[in-house]
Amino acid sequence: MFTELVEIGMMFRNGLVSIIPGGLGMAFEKELQFLKEQKKTVIARWFSSLNREDDIYPEQIDITERLRVANLFIDFIADFHIEAETHPFIISTREWSKKNYQQHRSFSSILNVNDKLKDAFINVFIDYENSKDVLKFLEVLFKRQNIFFREYCESHMKISLELLNEKDSKIDKLHNDRLNLIGKMASSMAHEIRNPLTAIAGFLKLIRQDILNRGQTQLQKYIDVIDDEFNSINMHITGFLSFSRNKAFEEKKIEISIMDLFNSTLFLLNPRLTNENIHLTINNIENCKINIQKISIQQVMSNIISNAIDALITVKFDKLIRIVSFQDEEYVYIHITNNGPEIPNEIRNLLFIPFMTNKENGTGLGLAICREIMTKNNGEIEFESNEKETNFILSFKKKDKKHHMSKS
Image (cartoon, rainbow, N blue to C red; front, side):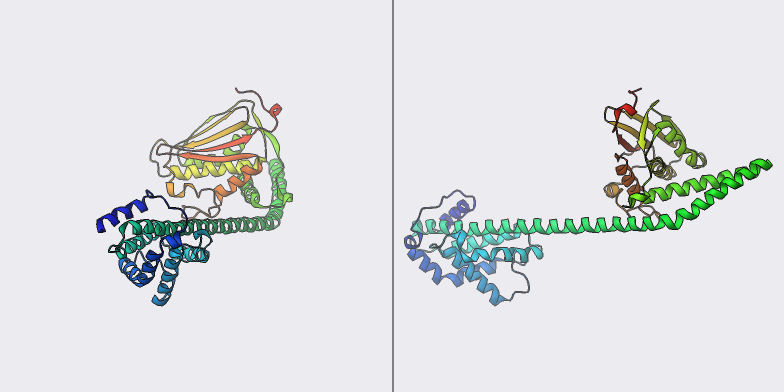
């Protein structure tokens, strides 16, 4: 009898036995009465087979409450006269699954508990007098038990998705709040920094004119250095203002050739390239123009090239940066490639997130600013990195094809 019941139990679990039609309460009156008499034994054997990992009841629930819930569960399974899907006990499924989810109970643990209850039923009915009837009876019991397990799993999945969506919403809100804060700071900085810079720029022009009249060439060189640093500061401020949502601070777009963009950007970076002994090559499209915010895009290119220079500090020989531009029917592309170390996998998804950096003295705003600027210029920024080289790709969508020449 025991071997036969175990084999049938395996068939139940694998779904190899089909449910029998109606009249279940009266058809199994004797078996239901026997189960009622043996309910305490079923629960005792069930509980004794569970270890700590299997125990799906929240830890704060005492044994009295556990026994009460177990009795209700078995009553649900044995209530053949009530459709399982409409049984009141099903209503408690969502709350139960929510508590277990909060305590990180796994599906495998729930499945194991479910199977051990089936084992307890089988063990109690081993010595039942009519083996043929009890096998059919256990079939119905297990069918109802599986309905509860299915409802439990569906509820668990719904709760999981709801909580994940809620967390995603909170993360998005925090990210947007952070960007808005940066934007407000940037707008405030525009008045605090740009006004004195404008005055400095005006006096630099007056000093330059006076120096030219007096023929003081050495002072002229000093003024050139000051002027370069002034332009650099102005470029960085323009980049930071890309986070501002105030349209009044946005730089106007102009049409500029790719080569002029390269020249104006590299003018400020040539001293660093020379000091670090970096070989720079440029392969440019001739007669190709794009409509952009010039100073802002200079900031993007300057940031990427500066990062490339930083990366190449660890390279002992043959430090290379290559700038290539090309176009197709829809986009103009600029590739900025260096042969420095590979970008670590653990930070690749964080590169364009504000305040995320692996540099000791970095702010984590450089590439985040670049992405904001590219978005405002109808463009995108991406990267590729391997052990041989790292390539940042700027792509600008062509709004008006008449502004562009055909491929060179």
